[in-house]
Image 1 (cartoon, rainbow, N blue to C red):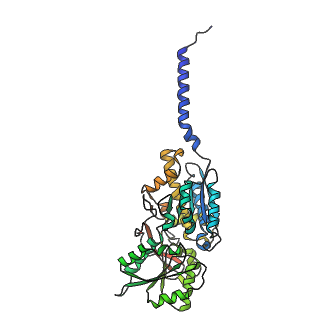
Image 2 (image 1 turned 180 degrees about the horizontal axis):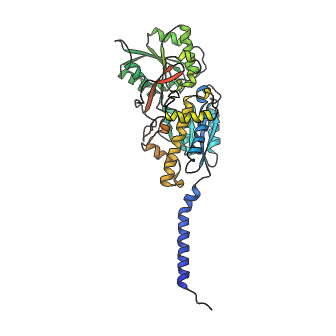
Image 3 (image 1 turned 90 degrees about the horizontal axis):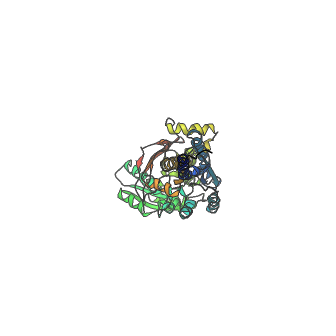
Amino acid sequence: MKTVNWHTVLRILVVTFVIAQFSTFIAPYAQAKPEKIYVGVIGDFSGPYAPVVGPTKAGAEDAWKYINNELGGVDGVKVIPLIADMAGKVDIGLSKYNEMVSMNPKPLFIDTFITPLAAALRERYIEDEIVGFHPGAYDTLYPVGLSYSYYAMYPELLAMGLKYLKDNHKGDSPLRVGILTWDTSYGRAIVIDQFYDYAKKIGVEIVDTQLFGIREIDVLTQLMKLKSKKIDHIITNCTASGPLTIKKGLKEMGWDIGVMNAAGGGWGTVRLAPELFENDLVVLPTRSFDEVDAPAIKTIMKYFKSNNRTKNEKSLFYLLAWQCAIMEYDILTKIVKEKGWDAVNAKAIDTVLRSGMEFSPLDMQTLKFTETRRTPPFARVYQVKSGKLLPMTDFLTVPDFQP
């Protein structure tokens, strides 16, 4: 009968115990790596905003295809965009959101491209512990929660545009402008004290403010009131049919006056009647499709063409969908690399965003957020020329209109 070597047995037991403990330590990280990631994308693909916002769908599909195929997803995990049409109606958008947050796993982000829906979701993001990206307006961002904007607030964009107009105004008399915008939370986002106070501060006179309904097709009454005030320029904050209604009214009146718009005045709007929008100004947060030699535009257009996108899908919101996707990829990659998959949650995402870290998705623009400011601070003035949007300035810092 052989003698038992208790020293060997003891060594085996110790090694087994150590391996078991180590396995217990690393198991949560190994098991926490998901098979897939969801990101929600809710936009108006068939309602009144569709000519401008509709290309969000194509942009999200193309951007995540680029991330999954060329960047390998997030640490090897593929990202699936959940894309839903809210048809321009907030109740439908809320229903789509409810479906998404009920999924397992639930989306890590919700990208919303309609201001009224974003406002309705602001408190839901906090309740459901989801970070939301959406348009920049007070009621979509404040009080501070888990809401962030992919561009500066509308009044900040147009305040920068006002400064550009003022600096290029000819003559000794002060620049006089009138506001004509939609009577919606989106349109009225610029009708705030900070905007009027800023105009006064830089020596611009806002002499009148007129509103019109989102489905109105005649604004001649409002235009006649503005014309009687002898203004030099019109400021608006609406999209698609809104600016088109204004420009048709101006043509009918024979009134040759420039119009300046913010994010709603991009390619989707201009394409409706390029000749009417000639020489108008648009303040945008990203590079232009028409900067054809820019590396970012080359990369984006490679996917645009390979996926057989049409000219109607050339829109600011196609670009914004790319910007959101790549920023979200950068955030998740940073968290996983530094802390592991177990740390991926809304709190960690919010911490990265609040840190002041700069994001430059494909060098389309620079985005930076802080503890209190939930909008990126940079934008550019463009002018419409033969249907193209050509840059008139570098990327400039917009005024800070935090509440």
